[in-house]
Structure formats: structure tokens, C-alpha cells
Length: 61
Image (cartoon, rainbow, N blue to C red; front, side, top):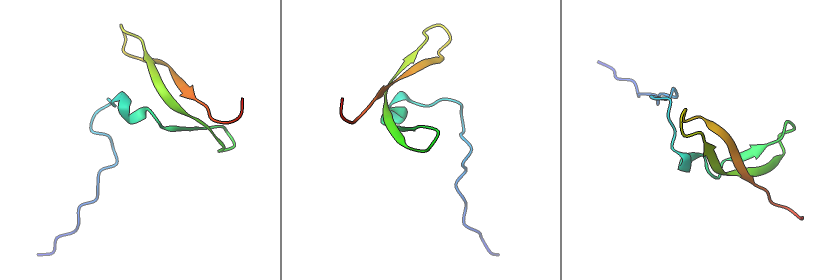
């Protein structure tokens, strides 16, 4: 009997993600130029939806 190697499942097992996994994620403009990174998420208390992300920008001024 031959066994094949298991391939990792790329489908998320649940619809939740921890905020610490998102913080530091690079953000790109439509031309694929990196414009910053996610610093914090702002979450609505009642629905639990992310309202917006606070980004950090590098560069001069």
C-alpha cells in the first residue's frame, strides 16, 4: 500500500483571526508599491467588525 504525503489545507478552519497576526502586515498601493504596515485595528464593540486599520508609514515627512 502506497501512502501519499498530506498537503496542507489552505482553507481557513474558522472565520476568525487574532489581531496580533494582522499587525505588521504590509499594505500596498494599486501599483504594488509598499506604502506602510498595519499598526492597530479598530473594532466595533457590538458587531465585532473591523471599522478601520491604523497604519504606520515610513519615509521622510
